[in-house]
Length: 124
Image (cartoon, rainbow, N blue to C red; front, top):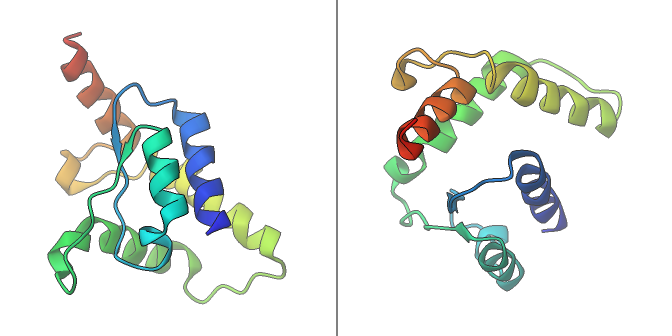
């Protein structure tokens, strides 16, 4: 559970969201704990739970992990946890979010899609 809270803290620190943020997960033990519920409430995060056994609720998350495994970690062996952590960080922060274009985002990267969405919300 500590790893989940650390990851969320890092995301909040880096992104500094201005609006309520949805945190998507399944109904696993970490996702349903009281510690996580308290943390989410204290940091203005919403946590809608997917319905048990409904694969469509997890489609976005499943799609990400499918791409992540296919594009980055499949057939790789890491010497240390730090090597794995750094490689995962590099994939997400240096490639996937700022550069990887997505059909569902109008061929924009997640960072560019978010920027355009925020501009529309703020009326800029």
